[in-house]
Amino acid sequence: MKAWGAGVIAALAALATAATAQDWTPLDADNTLVMETTQGRVIIALSPQMAPQGVARIKDLTRQGFYNGLLFHRVIDHFVAQTGNPNNKDGGRSPLPDMPLEAVFKLGEMVPHTVVAQPAGATTGFIGAVPYVAMTDRHMPPASDGSHAVRAWGTHCRGVLGMGRGEARDSANSELYLMRDTVTRLDRDYTVVGRVVSGFDALAALRVGEPPAQPDAMTEVRLLADMPASGRTKLEIMNTAGAAFATLVKAKRAEKGADFSVCDITVPVRTVP
Image 1 (cartoon, rainbow, N blue to C red):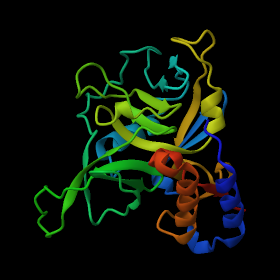
Image 2 (image 1 turned 180 degrees about the horizontal axis):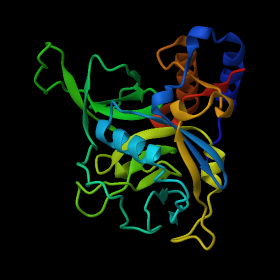
Image 3 (image 1 turned 135 degrees about the vertical axis):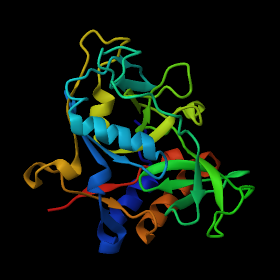
Image 4 (image 1 turned 180 degrees about the vertical axis):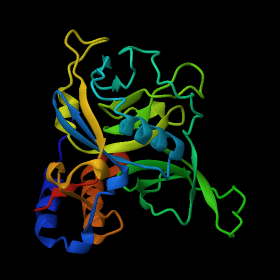
């Protein structure tokens, strides 16, 4: 796990006192995945704007209880943790049909997003908690309402959740992978569906192996909206359109200099009473 630098720690300390109520927003309960694992709870913000079919499939399987008890059958340091296959090895799938690849999507002007950097020929930022990269050239034709959209994709920063697949590009089904480090070479080849917002320590603690000698498991997976109020972790996520987030990005950019990238930022969350 990457450590925050001294400048960013100072910025976070300042934010803790200076941030206003407008700088925070509740997690979207309908699109928040709560994954109980043998190493602890992992909470994931899903992004239907990036991958509507993939998110719908994960929510459907979650509500069926499909993921409960499945193992992390392939865990590689500085790479991925794979799970979601009913046979607990590569190649397993649900009874549902395979799905088309949603690695690239159209980012329109009406989709709320926050730009944090503009490297040559691209922009990078966040849709909610999930990092993305987009083209800057507006070569796509306007939509029926006259708005424009650009090609964009979820980028594989640490904590990103994606859908595994076989050699065929349109073979995603039930398999999931969680990024244990930033590996952007996976961009545009796999469907990104969300990102961890809480539980990075649990993700880092998963036992390594192909398969691990004693694999960890997803003991229970639920949507936040389906959980009783008494069992919910009460979290708010920082509003990426707010002043507090802009301050955080500025501090991180100053620390990293020319090496700054969108993957250096994790959208903060806080526990509320």
